[in-house]
Length: 455
Image 1 (cartoon, helix red, strand yellow):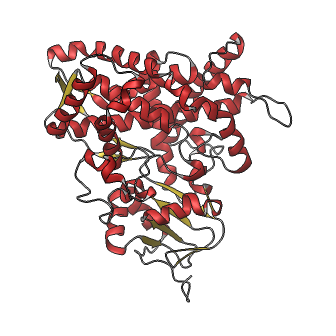
Image 2: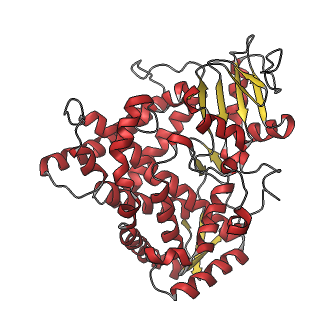
């Protein structure tokens, strides 16, 4: 700590309301501007004492300190508490021994060998999508690539994680998840949001409650059907149904199962769909990179459907996806709450302080990334990644809470891109705005409208 216990430099706001209003207007611009003006540690002050502050850390070593080196001092706290209205007590919202138990129970479902066995399922779902696109390709009618990716990843998540086909539910689930994300986002930007047991007759709250009930009907229906059938299909839900507490021998309740299923239903399709949407957007804007990708696919696959064993021979395909997630990380911002007082880069972090970090901002750090706004998949070629700090790039988080589904998501993204890019290229519809919308995930706000043409 510095001798006087200084907070890091940063903007001052007269009230928390003023800070939240600025954050709500354009959070990414606010964080990027603060990092440019004040450096790698920035404290936003909005009250009379140090407790009334929010600290942003940008440098990889500082992110590592929070997520890994001193992670026990930084809990999810109030930040993730506001996500519970949608996800409940699932892996992304819980802490401590309960989280460790649930993580142990879910981990076998995400073993590399088990995930690898899902490759055929992923390419079959993608081939089904391509067949549905045939009329669009023939007529030149535009489609919303973002919606199509949500439909695809939901179908894959339903079959891979829960052993069911959710294709018929795709539009409804996507709509209800969007309403949920928007509601959670609003709660993130409220000083003291009302508990959900307090009746809130506002239109947004009523829409959210209807959407949550609709999602619950689907999830509880999946659980009830599986309990009744007693089938063990080897998927995540089967494992969670079969597990027993080591001390009490009790099975998970329907509510516990609901929270985990909801977590994986959200994380298993929303974040991957967002990553794929931005990948297609960037490829459509950089035809030379799309051409290089097509050359690799043509050379290795020669038109056949990709398989798991093909992926090591498709390094550029993976680099394209990694670079897309550098520029547009689906989980664009995150945070923790300090339990005890700490020091980062010589600046004081008071106990209770909210500490934020953003892959979006760190992925553009000018000292770490040359020409950071450019789309350059060669950044992830082996010779250019050697020596790069671990937390210069962290789209899946890090430390003990690193995303359990990282391997699943990367496998899915590579197979989807390799399957589709052999068949089609996307041409953006002129005049249609493609703008990042920083909710809980970094969605394209108005979708990605594009027409198809043969690759």
